[in-house]
Length: 482
Image: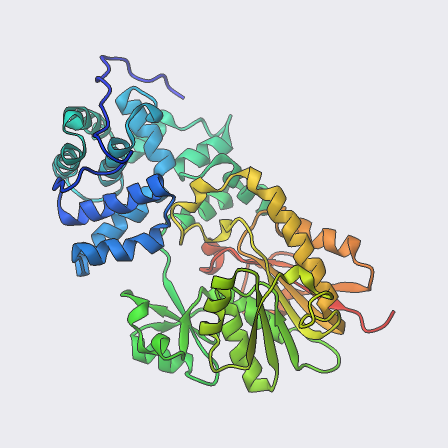
């Protein structure tokens, strides 16, 4: 990495009085779309809020719609995704570490740098609008912000990356981390899952930074994908027979979602539910179990499939408020929702050992497979999260294997490609299980024509290969003989 350019350091700004990191009451700096984007960004960093939950309220309160709402969304989500790279650039331009810049100003500079480096906003407009925003937050910092952003504007993104990114031949992981704005540990996890192929790792990281499409699931027996596509102006998905891809707009306004004929669900998640329902088993096929059902997307699709086949589904969710979401999502379907710990199989009266024909365990995980949908998630997760999560995953998979009867099947899924959460968990469960269990070839349970599924028997989906979240899928069969 090149040495920072030297020069006089701007004086440190003072945070305005009031709640740390909060805008001053009544500030009017910047235009409405940029102010809305800033409010989302600062809520995420100040309050640990979730962008997808904060953004709709902010847009509504600001009265933004159409192009203005789309612009605010791009700025907020784009800035949050790119924080790692933006921080490196802003710190170099400011000639100080980011933690030495007061939080309200820091988020304003991130927003301004994103406009300069990632959008077609003219540089003078990006600089002046951000300076106006900062002036409303901390008047004494306006000159500092102006100076920093003018330095950022001296180079385009490629120029900054050439200056600041570690050399790819000596530090390939660090290079990809800065170029694609991901933490190093996530870059390494992707590379490991892709067999060390750094070119494909770069493609996977780049896909995380693309705006994802909205996928809907047409509920079997209630509406077809063709009908849903016609109603919404969408198009059928690539793989799932129930998937529809929306061209844009707010999915909450789709009538079929409001009346329970469809729901929002990534196509990869649909494929997991469909594989669970399609896995071959011996004996009866009437009792299904979703062991980690919240918030209810897979349970709703499985429940609709169960209704067509004369089966019932027990949906288990440990958090009561999420269990209520599952109940709402599955209303009118042959689904019994149970607020319980999925690990209590054999102890809870409604979860008898060997009591189910099909079991799905979509285990809690780091969520590294859905980073494109959760812009702040990559900066919140860290490797220290893994031990507790992988222990929980092993325990849940062991419970799922106890729940399946001899001859039944268990589908294990995570929305993460991290090997500790995928193959290591499955391999560990197979080593510890006392009854005979064999892995089925999950590739055979996915649609014809899907390439890039690996050598099996498990499957790892990827945004850059399949256009889905990076879902992992393994299917295990309990032998019906000793």
